[in-house]
Image (cartoon, rainbow, N blue to C red; front, top):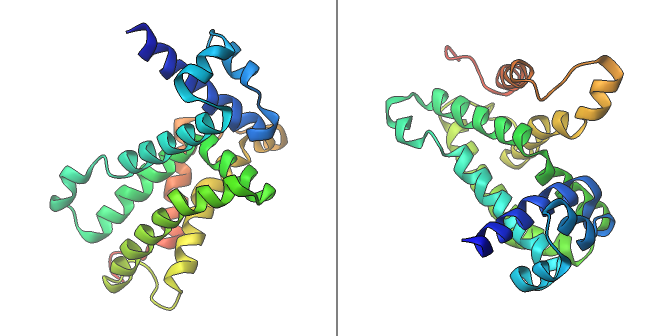
Amino acid sequence: MKEDNTKAKLLKAAISVFGTHGFNGGSVRQIASVADTNIGAIKYHYGSKENLWKEAITHLFEAMGAHIMRDMHAWPGMTARERVINSTRNYIQFCAQYPELNRMILSETIQDGDRMRWLATNHVKLFIERSAEWMAIAQDNGIYPKDISVLNLVFISMSVSQYLFLMAPLVEHAVGIDLFDEVEIEKHVEAVVKLLVKDAEG
């Protein structure tokens, strides 16, 4: 259906524009142009610029959850440590594939306004709570150090997983490495796992 296609194109365009320029820097005119449609289509499908931003954020959080859990069908056949490594790899791969989400979050965190509070209440709080539950179980299984606060562990894990891809353009100009190359993404996965996940022998 043409309407559904236009709506999807607007959402994709919004993620690109907001991920590059933030909410304040990105305009509905830019989004409409990237989506190859008109501003009226944004009002028709999403009502307003802010509603489109919220839909973009919600879409990315849902995609992130699905990406982290995509191998859940195979988890019963894995050890607890293997499951942690698998979900960590999936999360890092998502951060590399969609750096726009964390750019949008960072932009709103700097602004510290109503959108940031909506973001915290509707998405980030739940993500942190679920991550803390999983990490507490992993601590009990000896996979993560027990002498680190689980909340600090969540924040550390989030930071090391995301930050490199937030800084990717700077890193490429500074040292000539394309962090979005699959080999570099896997290197980062291995580095994060070695840094945070205890050896199988304990």
